Image (cartoon, rainbow, N blue to C red; front, side, top):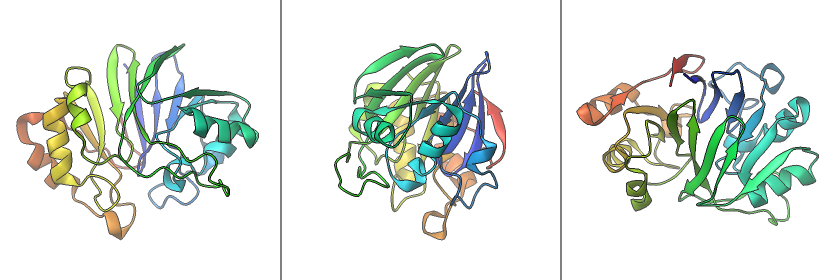
Length: 227
């Protein structure tokens, strides 16, 4: 069974049964919810939902140091490669690919799409959700999306859903509950909250709101859980 190591905000490492390490939305240097630095983290693959600094800020240095393959939208991966990243696999929304560790599909997400560090705007790109099949489990990382009707297309395809609840920049708790109703996952892990006062939320209150719709696992930054 794959294991999730939650680093706070939307950043996590998923470790598969064979020890492959997938780092999602690497944000360490300016992340107040973790004491880790990019030098403390190992990665075989880096998966990106979008290019905002709080999801992408440490991608390039992490990929350069570890040699990890960056997976994301074609434009975002292209930006990484133009800035010295050796290994990348560009995709687009709705497309999937089988990797040695499992399958990844980019799903629709509604959020703005600038790329941190791109001074020309050449690599502005759509945002994505990440639907992964790992060790027989279907894991969905929603990125920073708003509540969208596309969630209903995920019904029956998700075992574990990582959903933002912070509001202001993403869904809040009430919209995330509606997302649970549309997706119908077995397990929900709230993300993208309590990083800064502007996105302060009570995950236990969210758990109560979800009720019997799904099992909510509140994973504290620095903690881990089985997927």
